[in-house]
Length: 447
Image (cartoon, rainbow, N blue to C red; front, side, top):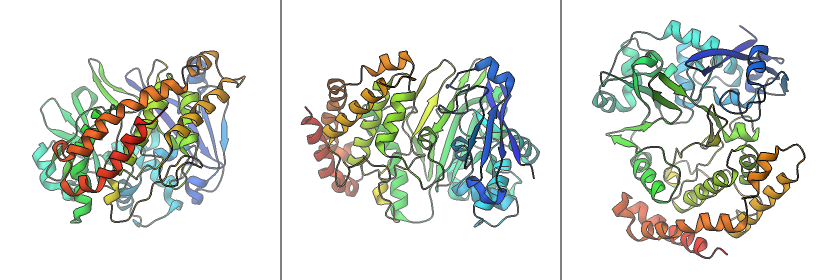
């Protein structure tokens, strides 16, 4: 088994070898193993200093300096199959579906060949190409009718799924791409020249009614997010028990497919593993430090937390929010995703990311604004922060944040009063109504 892997980045319509990660510790330690990460000399010379889509991640700027970590670089952990994708790949490799962290490296070298974003592991891409199976297209109805049995249906026809299930999370998800013939293909099997639309398709799980209700609400929740002024990419479509989610990390262009850089806020804040979470304060600090337009992004982030609290989306772990990087220096939050009434989950999911010392029952938004302004001021005083970023941070002030948050109050009041008209099921609307009204009142009272 190789103790190093080659990292490839999609740029200028081609996959380029841009760097590598080497294990310095035992493979059996999984993602906790010590690593050495670096860019190739050629890439470092050509794109030195870049933190946008030319880089592994915001905090791994392109350069000749190598990085040593007591664990895998966090962007590599983002690429490690988890949930449904992990189990399916473990079966394919002849390993137990309950195998722990000791098989992480083997999974990476097989399962990180078609990741979200514009990074992949070269060895995994080679493995995937050798195991992809035949090219076959499906209608939307065929995908939806099979539902959570779709993976088994594909396997029965010799089609390998794990290369198109590299989306982390417990829900069964598959990456499908629509071709010029209107059919849907496993994403890793279809040439870019044929791609017209890219989807994540999420399937219902079992017969639990609460889980079914969560899935039914994702499409109307995205419409509510648009109403609330949040950054939304496209409408979601639920067809039977299959939710079709248009992807925002891929853009079909006249020259093929543009892949944008993407990293979780776990990577942005340097939090490894799947249980560790940053505070909202730390996320805001990194958004202010890294993003091209810090006021716009930190305001979007706070608005999302208001919406999560108002609409009962408790599942705010470090991989349910991400940052997108383009090839022109732009760094921003991705459009919203995984937005649903997760309070319904039968496992009793708790709110994970919280405001430091200001999140016991409900955050005081005035205190949140003060804290964000304080962080911005501290960053402006850093000597090493680029002058352009310091200039942009001058816009982060209380009046601007209050002015950005207050407009959410009126649509929240409309949702509280007429939620069923906007797609909320009666029981869900009844449960959320008082909380939505409370958030609207708090925003109205901002000063």
